[in-house]
Image (tube, rainbow, N blue to C red; front, top):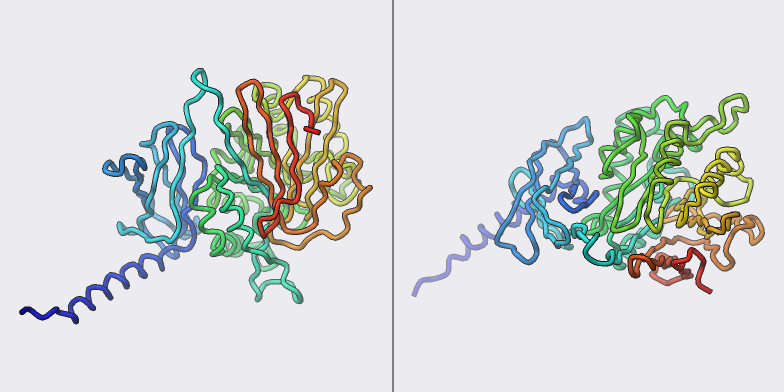
Length: 447
């Protein structure tokens, strides 16, 4: 009788384990889904050092036919990040993907899948879909944090978001917090983006949900930073390296401005930092968005035929509280011009998604044309919670929507083509629903 060769078997198992561990040691963060359209999807990852990255992917219903993205070499000057394009996909399909580093697969303990947008127009009603959103995500790093109580906490919120299985997530700025050692050097900025992106609790959410982002002051530069920030080009390079938006800037300008469409909803992502004049400069032209971006936004908004026009911008738009960096406090004329444009052009279905203020609230304004404009502020995800919100400080706040704890929002778009409705839920880090509102097809809130 042949005796089993246990030493050889043990050696093979150990070699296989060491091989898997070696591959995983090359993975710094990700994989992450960026934009996903009908005919292509962006897949992102970051390695610990220079390596060759590619993704193999296949239709979940036809696993025998596999495709591979073009390989990308990660380099130090882009933080060892890689963006790969899956361009052998078809509309409305579910795909599974596998990350390979230096030709070898990386084994992960959570699903790595994406769903392409369906080709629905002229064929069916638009698909239902869900969006997660939030702002202000601080990840502690003790040696560089302010002394005292840690500013970041409740990282489990990312697992709670992932459990909701949203189709996409829109990050509303302060997605990472640059600190004193980070602001003024490329090394510092890329370190901070790397550190925040590497949070273990974040990885499953990155892998199976599409991610889009804007920035605010803390992932752009110092607190309350503006267009005069001397190192904004470094911040833009890091933002572009770490996020998978379709584009970065409008009309040839740098920034985080972009647009995308999901199902029948148009999303406008605005940049409130690159062109902003200093908050305290009274003799400077008073603008948050800059003329080029503002003109583009107004024109694109007027051109949209979507039932909902979702506008992401770092700071609150509708709030009437004249405090800190709220639009009404620093740039009231520009705010008024946007709201007047919406009214004059009879634009329906506008909802601003905002962050920054470390509290959540829902504001509503009915203009002279009878159209409702909304502002859903969602903050914070993990950073410090605002404790000075008051019942009477924002005249446009919808009763019962003030939240002062870690939270995120889920937006559910549903209904037939001409009767689309939007359900908004605010959920805390533990998964408890804090409030829910529904915008009806006529633009009003459901009673």
